[in-house]
Image 1 (cartoon, rainbow, N blue to C red):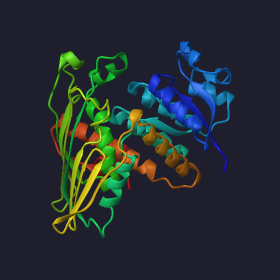
Image 2: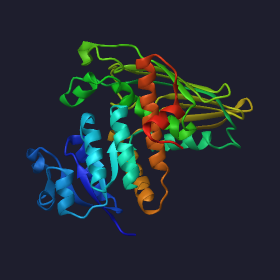
Image 3: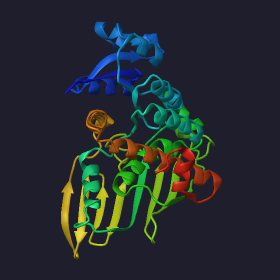
Image 4: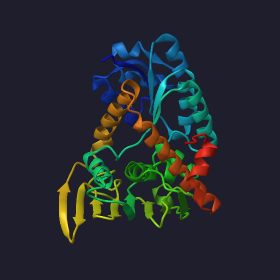
Length: 350
């Protein structure tokens, strides 16, 4: 099948890793690289330097491309996603697509007008453990109907580096960065809830880079799925040390109670209980170093959406952004947020 020609935006360390993954993917062909900083040209080979541009619009004028991958600082995402869509490019942007509802509405309006595919990339839901959790929860014969559940997560994230400064200054950054990893998994398993009620502690440990900006360090949430079915989430980004690496606690500790059985997950270990006994107890691949496995699998799903019209990845990722923002709104405005009303407001009516 024909390769998808793409433009890659960003040459920071994380972005450059994603570029290397994409270059190895047989379904994609690099035709343009974008970054404002010409000093980063030294990372590229001779051939790649010839397709280096200062903007998406400049690149699109010179090369034939069908898609765009965006990996830069979060406060630049909305502007670049809009530029990409306006240039008729199917767009894959690392989380979050936008930091607020105003920018997200603009993005959705352009996306719908252009009839392009838009995906928010996020980690931790494409590894073996996350996929197995989703498979069991959606197996009605094995798990039955969802009744209740919870997720607890703490993450080691010290915000003292230059690249992390946007998180210390942006209200609600906890939900648009760390919590996204767990909320994406929740949406994959259960879809969107009926409503959200969220509280967030102010936090502010200066020794690890936090200030008094709200909703940057934690979240306590009740997701109401209707008919007395609830899911609870407690997340904390505190700066704990972790000998197993930066992301080793990002997956979370999970419990799902079903009408036929219960699932418990801790990292890569998944245990399924039914009829008073353990039916499954297995260790699977969890978050790998730098989330390379997760991203490689996301790219395959993005390709399927473009070429095979299997577009569940777009719905799942946009629903995840809605859930992230619902948490922010609920915490900020101290109210229960109705998800259908929020979808309508954002221009994503069913």
